Image 1 (cartoon, rainbow over the protein chains, first blue to last red):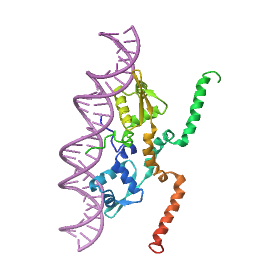
Image 2 (cartoon, protein in one colour):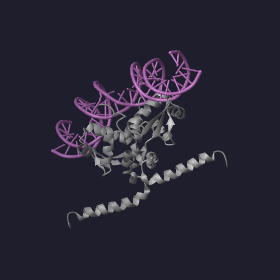
Image 3 (cartoon, helix red, strand yellow):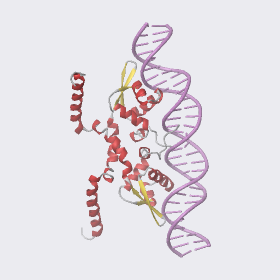
Image 4 (tube, each protein chain N blue to C red):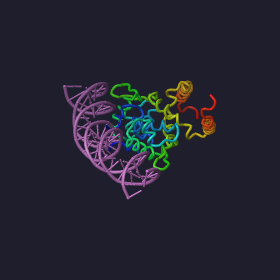
Length: 118
Length: 118
DNA sequence: TTGACGTATTCTGATATGGGCATATGATCT
DNA sequence: AGATCATATGCCCATATCAGAATACGTCAA
């Protein structure tokens, strides 16, 4: 087997830097493909292809307007990523350091307690 | 060109579900490769290989102990991901909805203002 | 209708991926 | 030293990736 399809989930979709850039631009509001092309300095077909991936994982929505397609961010698709990575926030954020210390102490007490009481 | 090497950055590293699983287990504390193998139900070589990727992006640290290697989570490597995705939190979190409304109103006023005053 | 424009799709090619299997390496025990 | 355990590496394969170029498609204007 090879790598999972990028179209599989948001985690794969945002692994590509250009796609993150696209989302970053779209965070500023709706854009046509042409605008994205010039803002990113990428070739039009690549932009369309990256947009397709983002569309398939639900990170963007499209709207037709004459011969243009207007893309709009749909951040909800990124929530699973945020949820997952937030679990690790305490590992680097000092604000949680103190809490962690307390938790560790509790854990150690628990172990010392063994099966004694309870 | 193909996709950027998975070993390049944390975004790529966590695009692989097994690697996320590895991190999730390691979040529970230090583990030997063998323990990870049985907890994930993966073949030992694949586990070692995934661990290598995680090591290269700095998401885990290793410690030698006799013939075992004890792996430990290093969440700091995930911070860039958290930072990036947090920018999008307001797009799905209701708590920010009200703020967004205000910002949009301000923006519209700005536009109506045109180049008038200022 | 014809042609220009805006965007999507297709094809190709170089490269990377992840799994499976065999094997190398290194530490421990007898 | 030899055997065994724990882990890492190497090789192969099927498949997926991304970029680039060509082209197809749909819409609008003349």
